[in-house]
Length: 226
Image 1 (cartoon, rainbow, N blue to C red):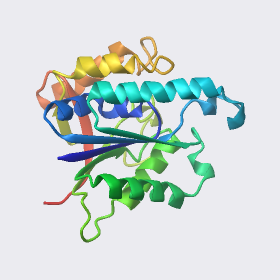
Image 2 (image 1 turned 30 degrees about the vertical axis):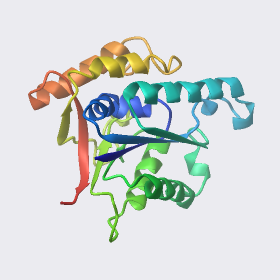
Image 3 (image 1 turned 60 degrees about the vertical axis):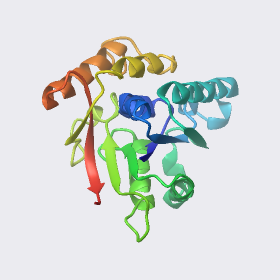
Image 4 (image 1 turned 30 degrees about the horizontal axis):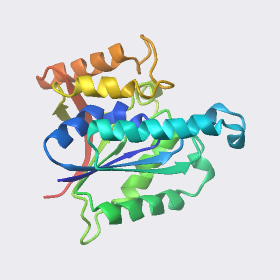
């Protein structure tokens, strides 16, 4: 199967479905990752003030992460971090449409629509537009994932909230997810932060308990065409 993971920022791909990527790679699926935003620059008042070396290092880490997870391709598009609302939604859609045309995925993973982070919300909307079920579209399945410290921190104030109904057994690949997350040293936090190693393990165990597994990643099915 050809799979495409769409993420707004470096680290979202790991937080949302790192264990699933690793498992699907181990099973021989072809996996592409699209990261729309460049990351980090929102920490500065003005984007142009950002430390270019830090951004470059982050992108190098993203490529290391993709390799360790077993992805076949990673493309980064350098949209302004946490400033997706300053550019046209159509521009984001065009980026995704072009990459989807190039990779012809059958299954797409993207952010959930109910999220605290506006970049995540716009990524979800752009993905739904870019993958709309037109005749001859390669995309048959679209799922959304949660991002710890972002999806749940909306506290159900935007509806509908994340209501997973698809669960992937990541018992064998959870360790890989936690280890590659450490490459994002500026994003990996100490417990009790949701992005800490301990919290990520707890989240996987929680979804595992929901679905009768030792560890799972959870997704909400948006569309599936047979």
